Length: 343
Image (tube, rainbow, N blue to C red; front, side, top):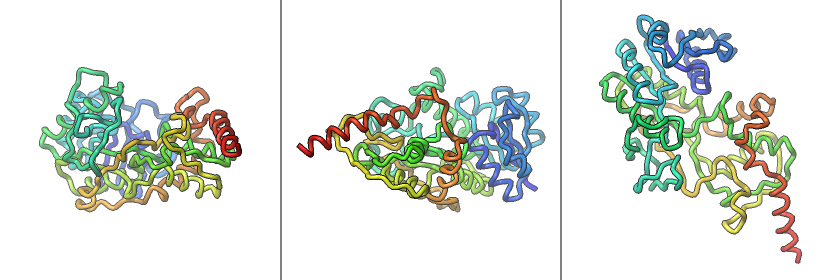
């Protein structure tokens, strides 16, 4: 029975990867600091929890033991993190580092966390230029996240070990925080009958089901190598199409109100707004033999049920969703527009 160790494996990514591997006959252990965060379904499926802090090399070595067929690092954010991973990876048949699409820059240096939105010339391939690696700024900051990820990637790839660096797009799945679909699910549950859409709902921000990322990880586990691969869903629906998918799932109907640039900029926003498409090219993964678990619509369905059941509702003070759910501002705008049309 092959063995997999997932560092930081109790979260969104680790849950999906562990469930897929367990279903495939793997022995799976996940590390974390708090056993209470171990998803119940992983324990039921046969997964093992090992208490280990990602920043404690001694605890990581103890969890790793004599080695593993697959080592997955869900918490590799910095060059220092990557160096500690490399010390283990020499005794792993295949190792995976979870990076991010945030490393990519467009032709003038803009990226997904810059003040100016990036404008890529088409689907982003792995050969697209990336940010300059840095380890002297806080990786938790907007300006520091991407450069630290690039630094971590370089340490992993320069090791010459069979390490696959995966660059996922915006990940969705059960356990996501924030679960962006809540911005639409809440509207459905509140019985909203209109859906204003900024930029006519044409924004495209490529999503990535955790289940699809898990499928790619299983693929590279079977084909060890040193490489960089994008990870994203096989389709890239627009914001309007995502909202329609969610409404259809619940059998809900509303009138779409496409807004143009003359509308107040704060109205009709969704988590998938983007002035220019952000889409990842995943052909390299497909060439390797990767087969996605499903499209956005099929993989998001269980997430929507999880959210509707109340398990994904954010804390009242979370603040993340406030800009998407300002019903009073929407109603005032739509009432005023109807009055103008009537006059």
